[in-house]
Image (cartoon, rainbow, N blue to C red; front, side, top):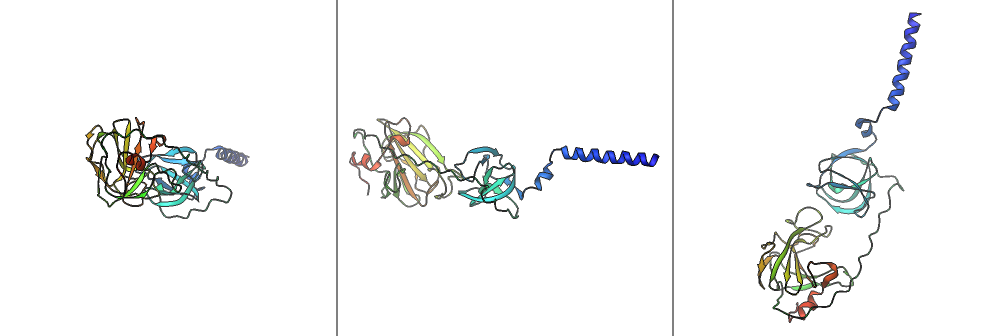
Length: 290
């Protein structure tokens, strides 16, 4: 009788442990068994954005801290991104069903399965940028000159580039860039979507690279983009016509050395809405581009 009683107790204990195991939370080790592998978010400092789909235009659903672990389930093709680890169009679906660009994930070599067909949200199409009508040019006053002696390679808001808010002047790397008129430096900025402005950029990036803005009399602002290194002027500095601002480069969204030059009117600050054609603006002041 004693042996039978001990057997009944053992069976009851086993049933209880099985029930409790079914109710226990999933451990990290158990969760890892459901994913293809893990990697480390590597952004260089900022948090890695988790999105609802494989696109930089998809809704942000959270972030992963730089150096944090990402739990990878499968891979799919999405927007091409130039990141800190690699340049790629591969996006990773994580265990929480969000997506991060593989351009920012450092991981050991392992096979990542392709996400099942129909399981990936459609990539949202960005709304086309509006074609703006430039404001009228202000009266020709003051003394003006070109920012450098170079040929015009891309004009203001052409049919091919309707959102190009300036002109591109083709010039060799390190060509001096000067202020077109007297004024005050109001901005010295590194503007790039990834990495640093101290290296050559490319068309997969966004941003003006190293750039300077100068405020002139009559609420006019000029902008000088894609400099090769940090400009030689500082915010608040007074400059005269022809004063050195920096040197031609190809930082930011750029496929080769050139100066992107913009003119803005009625401008406490430079915006798309107050950009005008630098060609027309300078021509009204007796200055013509090549």
